[in-house]
Length: 388
Ligand SMILES: Nc1ncnc2c1ncn2[C@@H]1O[C@H](COP(=O)(O)OP(=O)(O)O)[C@@H](O)[C@H]1O
Ligand SMILES: [Mg+2]
Image (cartoon, rainbow, N blue to C red; front, top):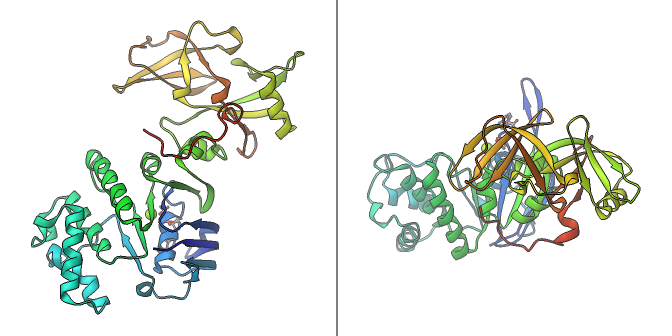
């Protein structure tokens, strides 16, 4: 097993249309044995980062180290890294056994007995012992996925890389395979980097999440850290489903030290003196974007007037465990997640409220987080995975 570090790593592709900066000045250290998930929208540089680490792309600038040793100039076969891709890349004419053992046969001088032992062990781990003599085209997508993972396991690598390995599976199987891969990691404790564009996959699997956008690192943290303390509006919007609601507001201070977030022409929401002070300690601005997650808003007719916002219902989406109520608020579609028995009619005006401890306050211009309501109440959230 090994740690992995990216030290100021940049990748520029020279394309006919000009230079494309796929990864820009990435600084990141992954600890030995960690399960880290890279997440971000399509094209943000996830695969390029993995491919540089695997040695399949050159590094334009900066240094990548494996177990402390620079590997920029080490050939892929000498890096002791195994990669699992989205499209599995299995040889159609070889059996499952042949596919799993091929890399070891051509790339190592291991004895046939040792190779067979590793194949048996990996096949057991992945539950594919019965498939060893079959050809890939007679297997389901999920089985092919297991074979591809098994082929990585037999290498007994220092680092596993997974590039969207579950994208071709249906939703149910994807969830099942997530659990399997998590179990595999806790058994083998091999440093793993897992790439996905699916924030839910990232939240449920990762020890730490690395969020990328447009080639640049946005935030690194545990699932709870990125959920409760997004470093900017991009992360706040990307993590969590349905996405956080945002509003443009101005902060007006009252004589008693408390304040009002005023969304001009639409609503005002009263905040405490201590939240006002907290904001004032961090910025001189009085215009912000505030964010509140759908799951933190309540339909409540009994909240104090200064914490109540009224809005007309647009659509109610029933998803079973809860309802998503979409409202027309401040000219934006705003989402509230409620218990299933709350089912207002379309067009009905409803009263909404939320706790200021669930608010997130961002700079108006660049979206950087200024204050999280949780800062005052909860302290640092415990380090563990978020249950979704
Ligand atoms: N071989 C290549 N040549 C030119 N541009 C590339 C190449 N590979 C990736 N890119 C560009 O680099 C950016 C990052 O791509 P990629 O790492 O594949 O993103 P992701 O895996 O996050 O979807 C994209 O703009 C993509 O078009
Ligand atoms: Mg990709």
